[in-house]
Length: 178
Ligand SMILES: [Zn+2]
Image (cartoon, rainbow, N blue to C red; front, top):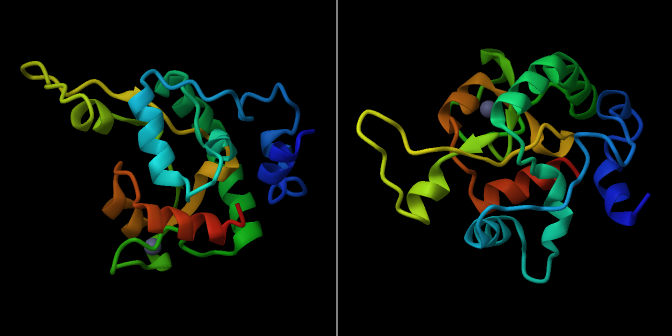
């Protein structure tokens, strides 16, 4: 196992390996980053990396397969993911992006990098929606444990599908020891 994988699995190896597996073939494991457009990779690189930080360490956050497949897989693991995350981090809101943050509102599992988004199509490529349609979405986020957090329902509905800011992301990754 490479150091990079060790790094990503460090938090999950003991209690989460049953959910996500730890073989190199595991569908949730790191795959080479294959962005459709170089400007997309640049966007995420700037969003995630501090100066001098390798982008490859964030590979597990991404999965470019069809969002439908990822959503189906997420449905199958979400219950267990929640149990494991709560066991590991406690019954807390890791998102904490709203003034209304309240763990008693209920807990969701949120994707740090959204499973899909049309933000880059709109903002980087100025793609306009066809009449009566939305701008096409792209597939980005993974169901890997590193991309999943406990989020109270208030924060989850406040965040919706937007991308978090760099400080928010750094705070969350520090919290997750990633
Ligand atoms: Zn919250």
